[in-house]
Structures are given as C-alpha cells and as structure tokens.
Amino acid sequence: CAVARPKDPVDYVAGWLARYVENDSILKKHNSAKDLERTAREAEEEARNERATAIANRRIRTDKAIEHIKTLKGDPDILYKHTANYAARLATAPANSLVVYLADLEEPVKEEVVKLPKKKKAEGEEGEEEEEEEEEEEEGPDSDLEEEEEGEASGDAPAEGAAEGAAEDYGGASMKDGEFDYSKMFYRYVAVAGTGKRGAHDWMLGKTLERPKGEVDENGEPVPPADGETPAPAPLSFSLVDADEDGHRAPWIDVKNVMHPSLDPTKPVTFLNGIPRVGAYFATPITLATGEIAGMLCADTLKTPSGGSGLPVSEEDKDLIREIADAAAEALRDAAEARAEKVAEAAAAQAALKAKLAAAAEEDDSDDSEDEGEGAEEEGEGAAEAPAEPPAEPPAEGEDAGEDAGADPAAAARAAMKAAIAAIKAAKKVLKQKKKLFRCVKELLAEIDDETLAEIRSYPRAPPLAYMVVKACLYTCGHKKFEFESWALTRKLLGEDFLDELRRLDPTAPRKEKAYAGATACMKGLKLKEVMRESKAGSLLFTWVRNFMLAQDAAHEVAFAY
Image (cartoon, rainbow, N blue to C red):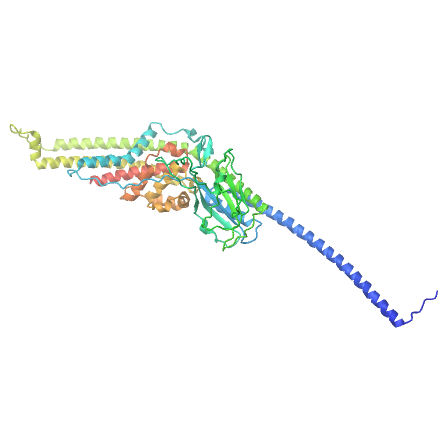
C-alpha cells in the first residue's frame, strides 16, 4: 500500500527521533524505578538479615554472659562487676547514653569496742584493790577462751549435723513474723558500668542509699512518729523491698522521666550527686531462691555532662537487665549451697583437730609428771647431801613469830624469791603446754588455701561471727582498723598474703598491745560451735587465733614474771 509522504521529511525524522528519545527515557525511568525497588528490597532484606543476625549474635553473647555469670560463685565483688559490665555492653542503647550499676543490701555491722589493757602494778605498790579490779576486768577475754576449751573438752562441740539449715543461710536479712526484715538495711553501690567512657561513673562506687534517720530508742529500734506526724518517706528504690498495705512489693521500678511532676511524692527519687537530672530510671531486684532480696541491678539515662540520652530505657534493655539479675541471683544461690557443703565438713575437721589436741595434751601431762618426778628426786638428793642447819632459837616471850620473820629481811627475801621461782616455773609450764597445742593448731594453716578462703569470701554480706574472727586475725597480723572497716574491704585482704602473714607470726614474740586489744575485743564472747554454723574457714581461723592468743598470753605471763 502506498505510504503518505510527510510534507517535511526532516520534520518527520525529527519528530520520530524526539518520540524515540522520549520513549527511551520513559523506559529507562521505568527500569531505573524497578532497579531502585529491587535495590530497596535487597537492602531491606539485607538489613532484616543483619538485624536477625545481630539479634542472634546478641542472644548468643547474652547466653554466654549469663552462663559465665552463673559460674562466678566465689568473690561477690567479681560477680557484681561482671554483672554490671555485661548489662552495659549487651544493651542496645547508643554509646554514652546509658549507665548500669549494682547495689547490694547491707546491714550495719556491730563494731568491736577496743580497750587497751591496763598495766599491772608491782607488789607492794599502793592501790592493790584497784589492781585486783583491773585484773578481774582483764580476765574477761582470756576466761572466754578458756571456757571455750572446757566446753569442747566436755563434748559441747556440735555434731556433724550442726550445719543443718545452713544451705538457706545467705548471710542476709533477719526474719520478722515469717518475712524478711529490711527495715535496718541500706543500699551500697558496689559496681558500675556505662556505654560511654570507661571510669566516668566510678564516683558512685561505695556510696550508700539509706532510709531517713528518725528517732531511735535506747535499743536502737526506730521510734514511731507521734500522732499527726508523717514519717519521712524512704527513697524510691526501697519500694523493691518494702511491702505496701496489701503486702505486695514492686516487681521492678520503671520511671520514664524522674523529673515528671506526676511521680508519687511518697516515693521520692534520690540523686546521689545531689543534682536533679532529666532521664529515665529502671531497677530490678536480685531475688534469691528463698525469696530474699540481695540487692538491685539498675540503669538510668540521666543527662549529665558525661553523657546520658534522657530517653526512656528500651524494652529490650529492660528484659536484658532482668535476665542478668536473675543469673546473678542464681550464682549467689550456688555460692550459698557450696558454703553449706563446706560448713558440713567443718564438724569433721574440728573433731579430728580436737583428737589431735587431746593427744598432745596427754603427752604434755606425761612429760610434766616425769619432770616432776625427776625434780622431786633431785630435791631429795639435794636435801640428803645438804648439811643439817642448826635449830632455830625459839622466839622470846611476848614476841610473835610473824614479827620475828618480819624482822629478818633475809628470810623475807628468800620467801619472796621462792614464790617468784615457783611462779616462773608455773608460767613456763603453762607456756610449754600452750606452745605444744599451738604447734598442732599451726598445722591448720597448711589445710587453709585460697579455695578454703573463697568460701568465706563468697558471703555477699558480712557473716557476723566469722567476720569478727577474721578481724581478730587481721588485728593480730598488725593491720589497722580502717583497712577492714567494711566487709567489702575485708574480702580483698583474704588471700595467700593473708595466710603468709599468719604463718610468720610467733606467739612468744613481744605482743603489741593495740593489736592484742583489738583481737581480744573481736574474740570476746565467740563460741566455736556458733562460728561453725557460719563458715568452715571461719571455724579453722577461730581455732588458730584462739590458741595463738592463749600461747601469747602464757608467753606474756612468763615475761612479766621475770
């Protein structure tokens, strides 16, 4: 068929080319859109895969962290440090936006009253009545140690079942009406970690969060407020341990903005540095198997010069913090069970030691009887060989025999010398006996290693009796009180160096009165059977320091007799 010829071939070609270019442009745009859509889908899928991989990797890291936390059954300080570090490192919060910290619940520890012993007065000095009173006061600590020995000798030591129930002993809160009583306890911040610069929040370590201190009676119990008076509210974090009117405790604390005016005024937020900040606060309790709360794991986003986003804590991070807190609680539970096993072994160890001490005492008695026999023979021979003294002239009439003896200073001196020699012999005999017993007890230090000390270090809170025993040992080694004024500081001293210090001590060396007074104050009133219920290591150290002090007392008496 015929094709119409365009009027202007050039214009026709130009139009065709323009349409071609336009169609090609449309086609390219379409292909480009498809490419962009495909690229977007691929990028989205890649991002989704990356998120899934990140979540899976984070889950793997979290599981490994939790498994590691559960194995930390030794020093609670190490457990607390790793717990805070893992929570901060595994959090999804951006860098320098979140701070995680851990606070344990502690109870005030009763301090020992250290009194320096008063110097004994020589015979014949004035104030003999005062001297007798002072000696009676000084007999207190030593008599406690002697009474403990008598109690053991009479079979008063506990049997193997003495540690029954110790598995539930976490060194924790006291019980009141079947519930754990936290009324006298306070929080101490023991570990901190952030998503920003390391060490930026270390100023929190060691700080405490306490209840408002009201009036107390002579027994230290809080006095209820008078009618019409409202007691000062406890800080918000205590709502984890304080039950409400219905007997319920907060399962956790979640505040999206600590400066929001709608917050409950009866549960005020406390700022450790004293400066209010904007941000969120989240805290979950570390709850043990018994239901007791050992502490809390917290996080905040408070805006400070060193960081903080001020935004709410994400749900993922809340779940992470709760999960890690549960792992820390399980580690504390396992540590308590391990302590219970060690405590169960304490009775057998003390029974073996008791038999060894009894054998040493019997051997010492036989040696003493032989020495006395030899001494009697020598005395008899000396009496036979000595020339007979002329009979003493009878005293004149009206003169008293006592006046005659008093008039003879040589006779009085001989009597005093004889009494002094007898006192020295008696003191040496006691010293010999105590040194022999101490040599048996000194072998205990070979049985105490770092693993044994780990049992006592694993207490998150100070075991009252074992803590006093450890302080007595530290006093004896020459440590100052400020070095072990808290249980956290004391735990750091219980290592191989501590055992080496004990091994180097010599009970016959001149004693340092301040150290002796401190050890005496710590040991006063303690009983072995009660210490054994708390700690195997504590019972071994109790036996060691008790016999060391008895030998030290005997050596001091010998030195004083001279």
